[in-house]
Every structure is written in C-alpha cells, then in structure tokens.
Length: 367
Image (tube, rainbow, N blue to C red; front, side):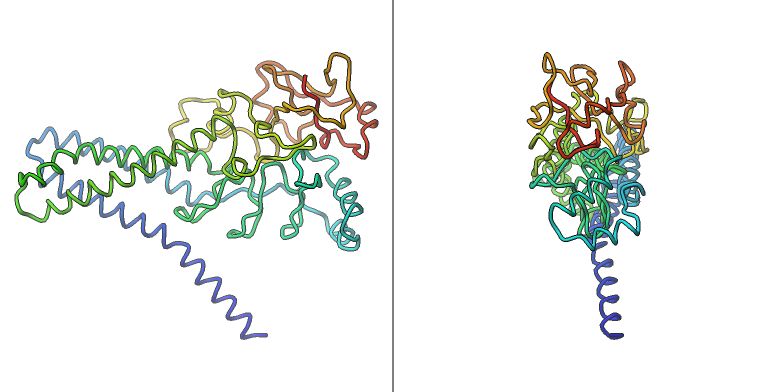
C-alpha cells in the first residue's frame, strides 16, 4: 500500500506542476513583449522623444492593468458553498443507509427545506454532490480539476490555472478586456514599423525581428481575445455562465435559459457592483454571496396552484419580474431595494403544494 500511496502523491504533484505550464507560457510571452516593445521598439527604433514618452506611458498603463487583473484571476480562491449546504454527520449516515431513489430524495428535500434551491437535475431531483457531500446551490457545479464545488462556476481556465466563478469572474472579464487593449495598442503602434520592415525601411539590426514577431503575436492574440471577450460580454448581458449557455438551467417548472436574467442593467450590476468608479478596477465588487440568486421565472409551473388573475401571492414584482419569496441571505436582495424587497411566503398556501413543504423549493407562477 505504501508504494501505491507514494506514487499517487507524486502523480498529483506532477499534475499540479503541469497545470502551471500555460501560466508560465503567458508570463514568458508578456516578459518578451515588454522587452521587445520598451527596449527594441520605443528606445531603439523610435526617433522622436515625444513619441517615445507617450508610447511608454500608455504602454505601462495598459500592462499594469493587464497584469493586475491577471494576477487577481489566478490567485483569487474560488468560493465554495456555505456550511449550511453541507450535510451534517448524521445526515450523511442517514443518506448512506437509504437506498437510492425516492427515499433518498425525501432525505435531501428535508435537508434542503430552508435553502434557496430552485434548480434541479434533468430528472427533477435535488442537485447533490456525492464528492463534496452537499446540496448544490443554484449555479454551483463540481470542478473535476479542482475536485470541489465552485459557486457560480463558469469554467476551469487552464490559462489562469484556476476555476472562473463567482469570486473572480469580474477579474476574468477585466483580464480579457485589458489583455485585448494591450494587444491592440501594441499592434497599432507597431504597425508603422512593421510596414517599414517589409519595405526595407528599417536598419538591419536585432530590433527589426522583434518588431516583426511582436506585431504578429499582438495581432494573433487580438483576434482570439476579441471573440472570447465578446462572447463573455454577451453572457453578462444575459446573466448566464458558460456552463449555463451550453446546458440550460432546469427549474421545477422545466428548463429556462433566461431564469436568472434580471434585465441588462441589473445583470451588469450583479457582476460589477453598484459603484461605477470601481467597475474598471480589479477589485471585488460583485453583488450577493454566490449561494443565492434572484430569478426571473418566465414559464408556468404546472404544479403551482393557480390564483385569480394568474398572480402568485408568494411572489413580488420588481420591474416586471417575479422574485423568490424566501432568500437565504439579504446580501443578494440588494439588487431589489430600489423598489421593494422579498417577503416571507404564506405558510398556509405552501402546505397545499404536493410533496413540497418548503417555499424555497417551490417555483412561482408567471404573472
């Protein structure tokens, strides 16, 4: 057993080292681009002192913001579900004793009765992680690389060797934005010298080859970054993660790709926060706790009892959107304080729901 344990430990350590290879590659590219732009392009190739000063100041402005956001994306620890989502020792034993099936689901429903769990599995069951032994919060997924559940997981990015989720999604967006601006700035200021290279207008020195490869690298990365950044901007506008874009969230009433969308303005604020002065800085300003999210339920829940006029007393309207009646915390409801806040649902009405005694596990009707 000892050799087997030692070999598995060595394998894991080797994997951890290999995971840093893409980050090391990006770091080498950035270091080379700094030398090529600052030394070979600005100091050696540019003739006018004014042009040198302007380009150097602008370049260092972009590179600082780029490296700051990249650092934050890499070293911001992804948040995991809060302790109330984890099973207690007695609940774990009870769940292990019960046979898989409806009996297990009854146990999970009892455990999740006070949690804001609105999404389901494809079979309509409570989302549960066997590895972490917890009830998954909405938009939470288990990362096979990190081997843990990540709040509002978007994807695991090898270029930052980290999971992109609730805690660092803003940093990831800024990283894409500033890296794109960084590459576009280099390509724009290097273009004139790149043309001179092909027209033999540059002296035959070491600088001409740095100038050529610098333009090629900046242009190539600009194309790939622009498409990736545009895609994530679209995701922010729709309030979706990459995983939700490929696999539509399943609520009790069925699939709903717009279930978490609150409108463009609130979707943007949910990621970047309320104070616009911090939007462009790689500091955490996202709203909420990552465990509970307002929902916009646009489809009819067939299991909900109907009310006169199609209205559900357990839901409140904010800008035309119904929201959950019972949040886990008040931090996420900050988005709703401009008009009216969530309220506790009527316990009497909830008792009439078939098989569901928890208002947090019941979806509201469309109004």
